[in-house]
Amino acid sequence: MSKTDVKVAQIHVVADPESDPELLDEFFERFGALDGLQRPSGVADAAASVEQLRADRIGAATVTIVLLGTCTWSRAGVDVEIEAALTPGADGLPNGLLALTLDRNAERSKMPERLKRNVESGYARLYRLPRTVDELAVWVAEAETARSTRTEKLRQTEDRLAADLPCTDTGVW
Image 1: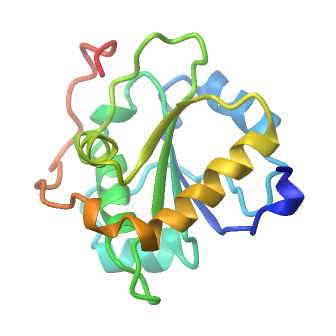
Image 2: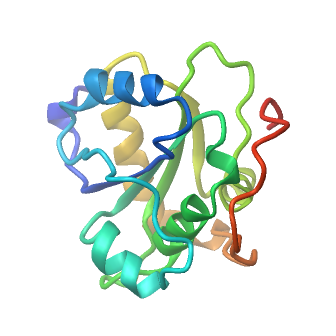
């Protein structure tokens, strides 16, 4: 299946620009041609409301991609963006959710706890960096389908991180 065969989703990207900025640049150089993919302007304010984030950062997006760098797991702003993405939007559905490890050679990548619970439950998917734009397009389409077919697996019970955690112990799932 090529990206031209896949329904185009609006894609909300969550990333920590301070975690491995070279890998983030490389990701957008390689995959920026995917329809609907836009580079984030930074990490959200951890004190922002879910409603504000859905309006200002997520908008009409139906899929959220979390780009996992070295310290992404520890950022409170990343957690609140994932929380907002998993909160039903105007259409009554949460965003589909997938995570990509920015370093294709990484053996492991630590995930934000909210993301980890959704990967473990089967709502979200975790992948290494895709090899092609077409491969990423297929994963995005699957995540968009999941927003209506796997909602019973969604996990949204954790308390929000109040502040960034120290970035240590980065090599554990």
